[in-house]
Image (cartoon, rainbow, N blue to C red; front, side, top):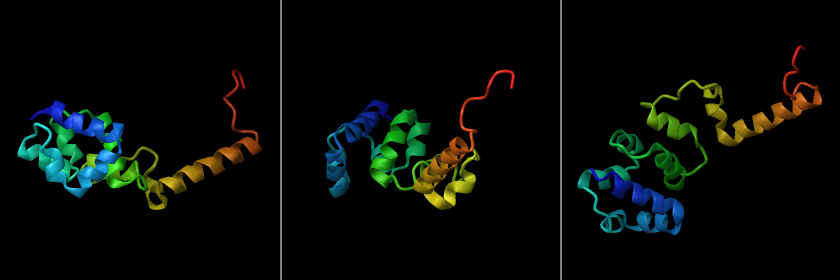
Length: 128
């Protein structure tokens, strides 16, 4: 496996988003410019980032590429599910999956505003 070649593809997606459109139009033709194995091309075409990460591809690049190829609407939930065998890891966000990222962010904004309004939004006071 040529980890470097896969990472170069991903880096170039992030560096120049117009390349993603080229890739979407004809994935095979686009990937021929890189020294990839047939297995690597298939993993990239199917956005199988978990398999690529298992082969040594940098997970920061897989995280960067996911919303570029799959859309950002359900990020980070769908990425986390993909990378964790189909399950959303319980990191305090499990209950928010149903409302999506925008709903989760809005909830956090409302909660922070309420805490500030009620005087409970600041840092803890020493000795209090």
